Amino acid sequence: MSAQHAAAYAAPEHDAVRRTLEPAFFASLLPQLLVRAGGGRVLDLGCGDCLAARLAGPALTDYTGVDHRALED
Image (cartoon, rainbow, N blue to C red; front, side, top):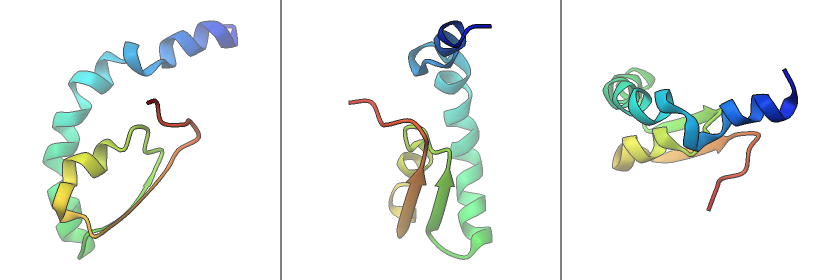
């Protein structure tokens, strides 16, 4: 598979799983993880568009998101 062909599948606007399933999954999981971790500090590796930070909202006291792709405007 060419890099150009693979990139078409990785484009955020074409990711149905990301758009439909991940928000609900992370919304149910994040509160449990924050309690279990004992605070609101998160290091989000592979953060993409920082979905975890947006869903956790005020429960976060310190958030660091790292991803190899730049955020889209």
